Image (cartoon, rainbow, N blue to C red; front, side, top):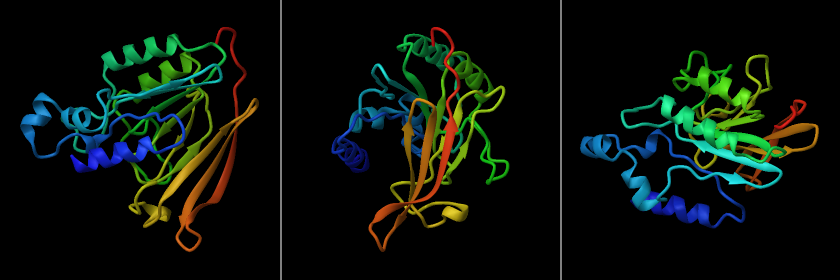
Length: 220
């Protein structure tokens, strides 16, 4: 409980709107009665009543989706009911806003990490996001960041975050805290990948990617 309360207090101090969704570590591992009857009970009691918090205005719409579930140990999924709900939420977004979807588990495999599983039903989810004009998917979970531009059959670009609030990175990010700073402009999405430098006490850019934005379809 103290960790949930501390996480919520930390987010409440941020000077900007916050978008969130739970991950697999928010589901109790050993308390099987909670896992069965109320897998997100601790989250709701100590962090927030809702599982997902979105953000939207005339220019930007960010929609969160929960990929963790009751019987997860590590991996995630999107059920048919969740996909239908996501479709409904995306359909109500302002037509001119840049559309972003946030999930804990990756929907696309990480090129540097080999055969790491993606969330179940990711293919259906990506087809839905493409149909609804989503430009960017943000995810985490793997403790290793990567950036994938939009591709045929997978319109959204993918920006995957490493580990921001701990040093449990993997691969070239081992023992490092990293984050992504994203700026969405009229023609491109610019991603600054940053790594914490303990000597300077700040996150320092290690790579910058510019992803072209697709031409907006009429009504999207």
